[in-house]
Length: 541
Image 1: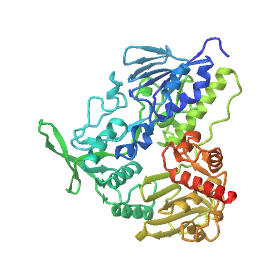
Image 2: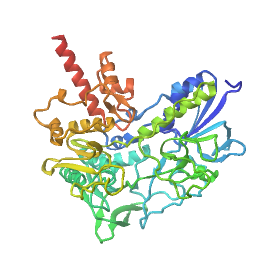
Image 3: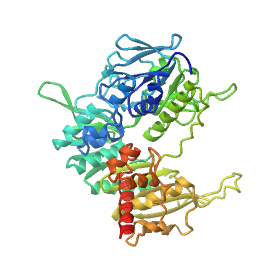
Image 4: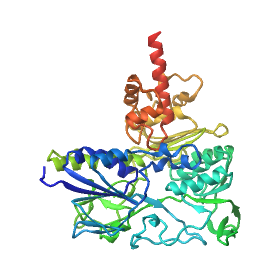
């Protein structure tokens, strides 16, 4: 252990940064390291993934809290909230803050996250940020000198959520531009809360990055049945405004390339996100779709700087003679991989500072399980979903490829909002889409996770959501089955907590962190608790 405490500076106090702080607290308590956290928002760290639920009144503010700031302060962590970083002075190993402070560091961790993409629309100023100096006012980190027009918002922070909540509460018409996971969740939640929602998107189906045509079509039909207006094949071009009583322009309608006008009271831009990389870029660090770091989450060109979460683009550093093309991949945009990065990096720092052996290598991220959280509409997608059942079954061996051909099994019941598609190779799932069949989705998720072979008769998997369902017939309740993908919590961990007397979803979350990420597993946690209670009652009788 070094004589002087290691000076660690963390830039960003979102959910990933907060997780890093929690995992580093033992090292700080020992006095082996100091930790200073710089966060642009004045609020404590909160779960941005669940902000859509808060925006429609389905969750209170306290339910978004994901960290104990008081415990961090008591451990000796220095929190600087409501302050921005304006520069990284690498030669001096200091960061410059917007209040004029200079913070020295031995290790600098960037967890700057991502901001909402602003599409090119006549009537909205789009800011070029690649070489833009961060503002001294932390509150303008995203808007800079180009705030969105009145009646137009994104959904990334608490202020955005308050604007959406006010519109939902007042029964206003919300126009959502973009039909990704967040856009669909907020539209469905607003409709369920009694509001009026319309989703406008350029492609044929919603969630086109995660679903195939069949799954997207079933989702669109289910959304319409839930009261959401779905407007596809519509390229937005400009905004129409009217003037408020104070003479300021307010959003009135979205104008599409085909001339149609879609009127509303609030326009919610849900067009994806982009990593906040300008601070790293100004410091001369290599960036692509995120801050480029190697398998150790270390900058390609500065061994003292690291990146985690939505701002981190993990890729092998190039060697002499390698291609100069930008590396493939990019930030996952999901909270689970970011939390795993935070856990691993904190463990690695602890080992290095205390002189312990290096931790195991950071495990490569598996294909992310994408879940749509909406009342009465269950959507799960993972892996390769693009293959079509009517593609020619070409034997890849004969074509000179080592891999076996893909096969597709598909079942659809659009009338009742049900759809399943399984893409397999040698009987092993390569990916699947499952809509309206939560038990089947849970079984397929486990089979995908384990790499287990599917039954030769794929139709038996549909029985999990049938009237003759028998839990014992499936493996989704096996102790090693993952329930919470964000935190890697298994059925066994939940059952152990239940055996210790923790029998509520909130209690399980506090004990194991299950359900505290995207929230898509809460129904599954409830199923496990219900099954445990039934088994306990049966054994007692």
